[in-house]
Length: 146
Image 1 (cartoon, one colour):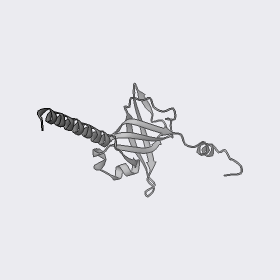
Image 2: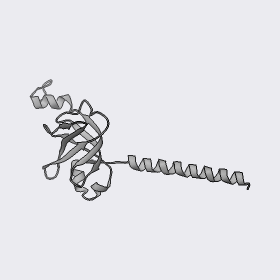
Image 3: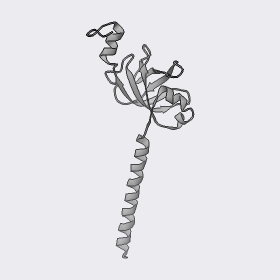
């Protein structure tokens, strides 16, 4: 093999390996485990090591805005013990919170659980409870339904 061909081959190999490494590390960084608040607490020490997506309902009155940082609490009722478990969340993302991010909305936050027990999120999604659930809570009856 000529010297120029060898240099080209080595250069090409370095580029391909670098791209493969960047692709793999990007995939690993974007991978997140989806859990509820109850499942998060059940996973114990593993929760600190993983990137997570955690779902729960926003506790009414817990939303506090401090500049670009939003602190709030999400909760979920444990189906076995019937106890409500809560998780403090600190949203430090670059995107504005969704318009549907209000008290009692279901929120899905993505980030990492800190050793202090606060979940630091850099992504957030929120959706309002259905209008029928809101109407039911307000005592509105629809078409003979209770």
